[in-house]
Length: 250
Length: 252
Image 1 (cartoon, chains in turn brown, purple):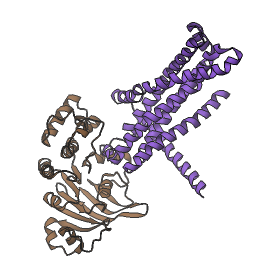
Image 2 (cartoon, chains in turn red, brown):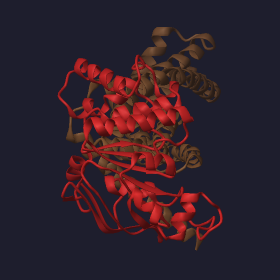
Image 3 (spheres, rainbow over the protein chains, first blue to last red):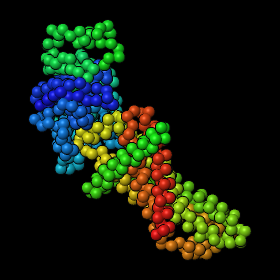
């Protein structure tokens, strides 16, 4: 479904991604894990086409998106549903307008039909009667769930979660994790989860890639982690400050 | 070397702003707008600015009347206050002052809004929904500004003239009908049209500069800086374009 080949990205001569290779199969949940600042969000944004790759290519559903024009890219983007790190709900719109945004923009449904769909989708993520509220009136956990509802309402083929559990309380974290698992089973979507939280990541993922300093240093099934020899991966799994990964190295 | 760097920076800025304006014009002509998205902007940019524009233009009208009266008193020609107030407001002060007010009030707010959307990934979210941020965010503001500015300017001219009349009537006992006759006799079609053309240009400048500055920040600290830059650069562009347009209308 997604294939990343030799992907490199530079910011002012600083290499943020270095020949990254991995592939995500249709219907699986793939985890990209790494320390904060390892280049995970840059990798995600390059996969969605928000950032342009300097080298290498990204293939989504057999289409190389690296050199696509805006029209082609827009077509591909509608296959994605993205849940951003800070939820990225539109401040000036109500919950109903946020969740129904894609339908208002790209469907021929009437306002009444969209409102019904919004209600159903909010129910799906465990929220009721908040359609009239603005994002600033919601808690962190509710914002995340509204962001998930906004991402799934138009039934995308690929769901991308960027740090889905960052900045929310443990009970909300558990709710979000269950919700992601539930959505995955219900819609049989391909999910790409980016996080630095190993416990959450391993709960969700079938396979994973470990990103360090812009490079993939491990890719495989989560069961393979018990046999891994790379000291850096072991240090991360242990969550220890002593080891080959130094403080400044991301 | 520092001067050369600054000149290079200036040309870079103008160049990238030029490309941004090109994109705005492309989306401006490419499709019809939803009235709903425009009405929100028109209320925010136009109607909400009425109070401040009223206050400033009314008092500027009074100030011009007193200042000109001070000079005209020597020739016992205070009656010409009406003509001078009308001419200076319609040709110059109405468009310029209203634009500066809108740039400081609405322009700063537009920059802050887009800037905070940029750093909280809302702009990225728009793009993932295959919605072009310039088309969705900027063009409605651009249209609203170029529509609201001429209306605000006509309103500011009217209130300024009213301020001038207050001085004329209360201080110099000029009768109402005579004051307004002097006002309209002095005004030519060209004075009003040139003021309106200026206001449309200034509205476009405020939209382009404030939105462009909004797209530049990459951190919350830079949003604050962008708001300052937005107001300062809008002022600069308005004054420079005012000079160019005044010269143009003079030779026309």
